[in-house]
Image (tube, rainbow, N blue to C red; front, top):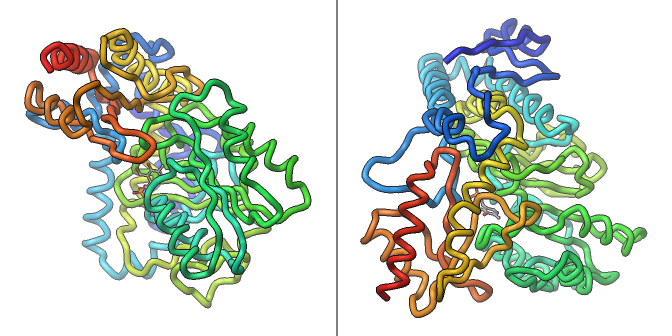
Length: 429
Ligand SMILES: Cc1ncc(COP(=O)(O)O)c(C=O)c1O
């Protein structure tokens, strides 16, 4: 694979402190591979096959459950392994002399990726840690209210429930349809619950159960207009939307955004982020105390003790590797294409329900389906037994079905196996 690096101030700085001097430029995080030709066309199988070949693939089964985390590109994994070896070789020398620069380099690279001020960006282990910092660290008073989604991720719902038990806050659950008729339905589901006691509005950008994308900017805009003078923070769970759908994070007007970079950024497992608007940084208590860092410094949310810094180093490589796809638009369009490729073929099959909106604005790679006469568990088991297709059963008060998540590593022939298997199962059940 051909790679062309760009030299930048940051790379020179990294070299000066003895860190690996991968050439990334602040203006152009480049990882040129010569593979991006044809990728503007989401249906160009020849072009996308070359990308698929860059991921490690499982043996003996078809992996269609990439919603848990996204596997990393081979090159990123190799790089991360080499960095782990370096850390293990130099051991405490790395931790004492080079760790801080490595973290700062990762922070700077991620800030460039998002178009954010790096002083608002903390590197955590995942979304769960980031959002627990926010939910458990807010200075709640009894009677404060929060509005969250009924389909929010379980760990966040439980964190709010713990805060309710601990501090006496009131949780209001917004119920949105699986396939909303229009954006106003979703907006109203949230905003009709907001009142002068609401201190936090928690929005899951892409719902993990179904893959539905909510109209984030519209909700935020209306929420701000509604409560211009009130103290309500807008918090976004972006675990599934970052580096997956085409969205301008630079323009996102939320107070807090949290995400997991081992999902669609394809970074090594165990790296996430927490972005807090500058004026709110001092508001929150960190999960793990660090008295040496100023209350206004975002780094006070990074006190985790000894941890695998190779994940931070691998993150920089993963960010650079995004250039391989030509653009986020190309990547998002391909992920969306893969989902719609199989979902549209099943839409008219009797007894099959697609439980995800299929428009490009409201979905990406993930969709959820149900089949009449079968539980979600039975359907996942049938797919496995018949065709060794791995999916996950979703059993939730709001939705029961199986979640199917292809990735850039998924081939069209694998999706054809899925379609034929589901048609076959629907005939024989
Ligand atoms: C919407 C959403 N939020 C948060 C998480 C938690 O991510 P992590 O396990 O990386 O903390 C997930 C995981 O799938 C998710 O789907």
